[in-house]
Length: 174
Image (cartoon, rainbow, N blue to C red; front, top):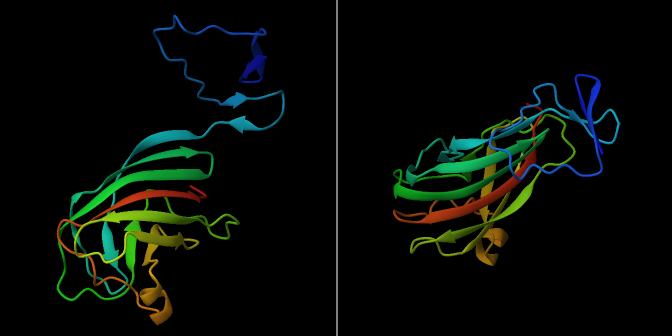
């Protein structure tokens, strides 16, 4: 194995033991793997204060809204829980969860994901959705047969104390 830093081969060894390391190595210029031109130079982890809104323009108040994300290159994975503490009056339209990075325009890997829910007002415990190119939102839909067959947008059945466990992976150009 060899590690290339700024175009110079730094370490060449069959195995590298880093178990005794107490400091973190930073490779700001990226790491070239296998001598190829593929460089790992965009890795980020963090948290995102997400919002839950409707396509009708109303906002839910959330008591829990911090989602964790990991971004490697253009691939973003976000996960965590959203818990509703107040519901807007007569919400209309589909539910939308805000994302930490915009979905890439013209991306070939838009996401679809399952979201599990908890609570008493929600009449389905399985939700699903998808991202749309050039937006920073995940469109959320109930996956029960009534809402799917009727084409209902599903904003209405969410109440105080209801929550969503989300796990979404999508591609960005950021």
